[in-house]
Length: 117
Image (cartoon, rainbow, N blue to C red):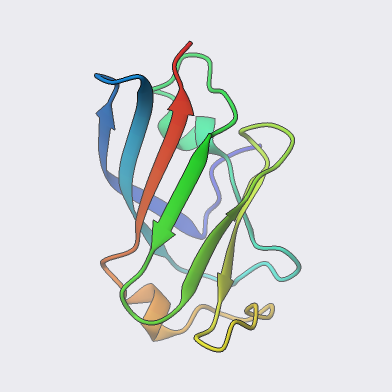
């Protein structure tokens, strides 16, 4: 897989001091939502500087500030998981351009937790 052109990642932080490894970042969206399950989010492509041999995440937490729900749908590898976005009424977005509440949300954060090697 590769980096999804609709999702930009910034403010990356890494914490490997405890029993697990954590990656924190800010997500910014543009373009069109890929209906039917969400946008592909290739963890190794975005965070290759932090994980030499990425493993499937233990947990992924995503939160925005404008009322939309964000959920990570695990794939069979760290490269083919998806980020699913739902409205406040828990309806998945359709194949439409992201609206201003998503593209303008500067507070969408992601936390990825994995086991240490």
